[in-house]
Length: 443
Image (cartoon, rainbow, N blue to C red; front, side, top):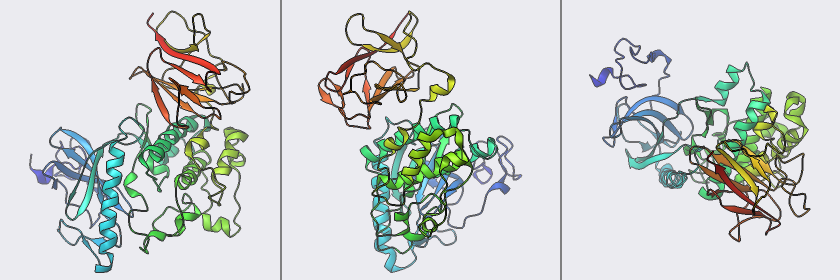
């Protein structure tokens, strides 16, 4: 095929007429960008650069084709606006001023460091997978899996302007727990959470994307930091290049995204809220979320970062179990002889509960907060932990949310982090307050 006419969307069809004869991509849908790499540019002699998937203050993301694997992928190019330029048909980026050289070099290093950290989170399927990263053209790149699907903004349009609460909450729960792992294990803060960066695949899987936009990539002395943010999602600390930021920064943006997704109304910009602009509790705009979730949103959107909810897992712990909307009983049905995952009281003849596949189940002593109540011992938290069975991997995951901890083989698990359990393995609520065993029947 003549590379000049190769489609920049599917990489297989002919686009000489302006519309791909194979996938239907229309070149008129593209917005011109003078800073982009040329179409079909052979990055590292391996990745053919196609159309632009998105661009922002710190980079351009391209759809690309991996010649080695024969698969589509996405390539993020580090390109901080105002710091660098690419003139004409130049491949290399260059700083717009010698005073920006230090900022640019620091940014490239941070960009590569984050690619390395994200590349280690291959066991978190909700986070876009980084497959390669390298330096070329005097800048940095990382290669990610290409994800088919729709982002939350597109889903909102599909639903007529806002996503029903019962469908939005499971999406945000999965995304939130994944983001929490990125914080705790990767040491990375997204700083750009919005409806554009949370996707849902055709199979219904939730994916977090666009981590290459982290706002601390350039130096604290850069004057461009204070203006490259998303109003309505950014907390007060992002309006200053010197304010402390952390997981609580993403908590604010994540809660603001949820607020917008289920209500269709954006949260008032943080500076305007400081100036006295009204903040309306979410339950007034979307009563279906319930008072508990609305209160959690209010706390996650506090302007004072010290009083705000600090961790995403803490925020989404207020969300109800997805299966509750489907009418599941809080204690679930006991297991039968058919193939099914279960959790049971450890020991011969212990009571057993069947688990839904690929859905979170909450375990604790409170009927209002938990789905499975193995004991009402006061040392067990109202919501003690969560359990998830991955039907593809045939693996269980337990997440501690308690005061007295969850123990596996005598070791206390780190709170808020997912741990894998094998078939037949036991875990304890507290230190042997209540021992439970997971497994699955084979019929």
